[in-house]
Amino acid sequence: MTANKKPIKIYLADDDEDDLMLFSEALEELPINCKMYNFKDGIYLMGQLMVKETPLPDLVILDINMPLMNGAACLLKIRETERIGSLPVIIYSNSFEKSEVESFKDMGASGYLQKPNSFNLLKTLLYKCIQPYAQGNYQKTTNNFVIQV
Image (cartoon, rainbow, N blue to C red; front, side):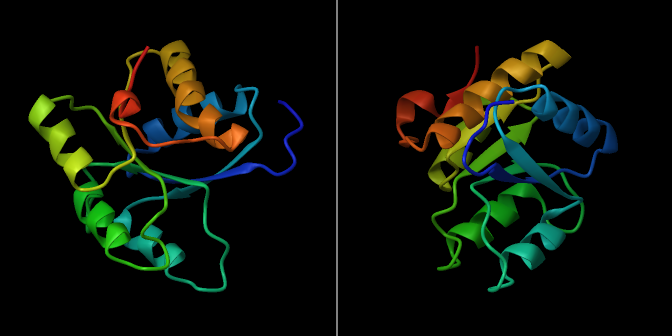
């Protein structure tokens, strides 16, 4: 792990325990100083984001299919809330339908990451996803919306 001044604070909302574990293990192996906070659905995530005294994360990663509040509803709520509306939000999903990807782009997502089928690919994609935030030079463009190898 590199000695970044402060860790990149990542909020991950995903109800799948196996996905959470793999995601956490992959982050630990990256050469980026990260601190991940897990939320089992959008309700818990939004509850944390709405606490005014709590410092905001550098990046939010949302699974689409979650109980109580899914990723789409959570993204819309984030974008309509002044305090958190500009947070970078990456959609993290098993699905990769072009119309769905476009829909999330139109809703204001910062990126779209399809859940890969191997641990090494997950590490590669997470590095590609998080590195711009670690360097402090992330710029949203349409060219880098879909995070892929």
